[in-house]
Length: 394
Image (cartoon, rainbow, N blue to C red):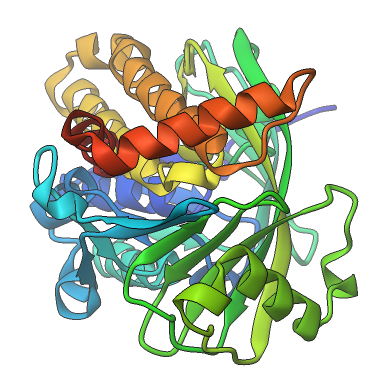
């Protein structure tokens, strides 16, 4: 395939307008560095796409430091406790008073993305939505390029000093990337639901049940996120609303702890739990961030937080290279980010084993160990401090 000259040259070309790409682009624009973001979805799509909503203190601090927290300050809500419901009973952990005494800030990701898009454009950034990156080239040369196609079929070639792959685990950057990785494919699938209904309690609720995991995650006074473990081959459309609410009520033990506040379910989908760790996450002039750098299961709400912190690290390195001529931070990018990614994966894996019915050759034995872990978490201050530090931290 013949690829001609560049139609546009930027200092940094960013693939993907999720939290990683938008935080990166905003920080660069704030430093006077010219960037272009390519996003295959429409602006309306990325601003309405419901994703995680729990931000760690470190993520909030990054957004505050770079002037990206206006919506967060006015509409975000602090969250400092969670509840576990098991066959042995229930217990609540006020993690804001444990460990480092830190709290989450609940702010739906679609609201954060909407804020970040508006601010990026205000800072003079160029966002090309409905534009699909099709090919990357010359990644080890002085001017890497991306061939992109618009929704209308128009092809453009864009060059840049550096390319940031923030386009997810299935995006072009990750597909182009050739690096060692370790992967865990969990035989666990969640039915992910958004209900037009108030949460039953103000806390996150984890239901550990023999039929499978169930979870309640408050998203606002009138909207609640629910997760329901299901067969990996299920079609989410085949679950009637009555079946969903009955299953949630059973696994969250509504008979003992109070009825759920049901309402219309307006979004549903399947989440297959999978984790992958890459090392390194840089090759030549291509650097990965967010889900492109690491696919992580949603069991501990670490994905968006890893994206924000990785974007801050990468932005600082780009600024040092492009404005100060010092590439040392870019060379250390993987070494700085991968240990943080591994820590997040370790706790996410720990949570998966804590919340789901054991599988494998000795399920009865593993179930006994699971009950021991839950008992320790309910009764041991040392265990609770460990949980709080890792649950909120990143």
